[in-house]
Image 1 (cartoon, protein in one colour):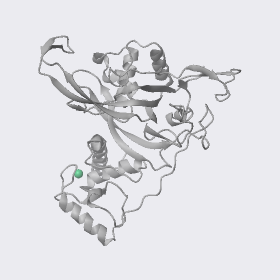
Image 2 (cartoon, protein in one colour):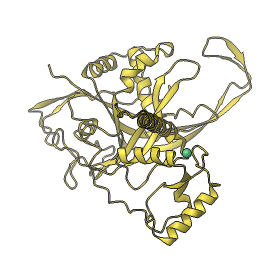
Image 3 (cartoon, helix red, strand yellow):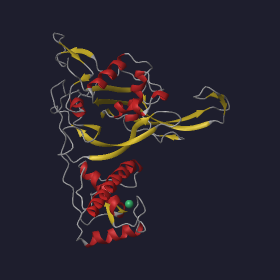
Image 4 (cartoon, protein in one colour):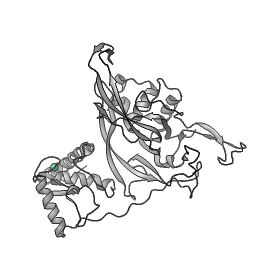
Length: 391
Ligand SMILES: [Zn+2]
């Protein structure tokens, strides 16, 4: 029996709402594509894991799966004016009745979007998820409970051998279970589906949001990275806990020729190469002037930890080499700068770099700072004791 390490899911419906962890208040915005916490929540529903059972131990094997999302149709953002209560008794999650004022929220949705999600990891976990999705314990929904899927989540079906000819002579079994070197490879093998009759051409490339780096990727390509705080640690009441992950946003060419809709199992993916980024030029007088101005604007303090700043960080290299603008730099201390740079180099980041003021990066920077402190203190200790640094 083949060991399948990849599970493909089609997430499509009139509405989807993949809320961000902070979207629990009056304005509830949604992410542009399914979040890891949302997809894991859906898997928990399929397996019948209730919130009180969603402990760190239960969620760990799910959180460790690599996830990539292909945006087949981005959908339209839609904002709903929502009222709850209006002076009536309301049942709480705990089962009690509570009378309250009308609660107003603005809830965002994605209308008519379609995503293809690849989950990649331990074959045993993948098989378990597949079995659960074939026979889910609870109803499955796309982020919010009101968002019902309009097509089956699993790709399992039988299609004619030649999708174009459709003569019914040969038949191919298509399955959501795949064996792939990484989730991108699995996504690239699934043809893009036209939605309307007039969509005859597949888009040249599709947006993909993926965990980064992936096996077999991450060294050659310069990619645009962002941090997402959507890896669930647990869903235990009253407040679930999340960690951050590094997400690459890239364009996936699915290998089809001009004007051709890709067919099953033909192409392999290719990632376009990003242009080399310009370098900072420390001898450039204009750069030195703007650097000084930025340090002054940040009161000579690190924007991350408020220690005295000794350097600046490029949030983007778009105008590097002397054309930098004030809002493209941030004052940082040596430690925070080293932490940001190590994350950037470790992931081969492209033109846009880490903004240390962006709360999504916060936890990853703190973790890297701690690694540096631990390593340096060990090095210093060893030097003082005349010992070798050992791992
Ligand atoms: Zn600092």
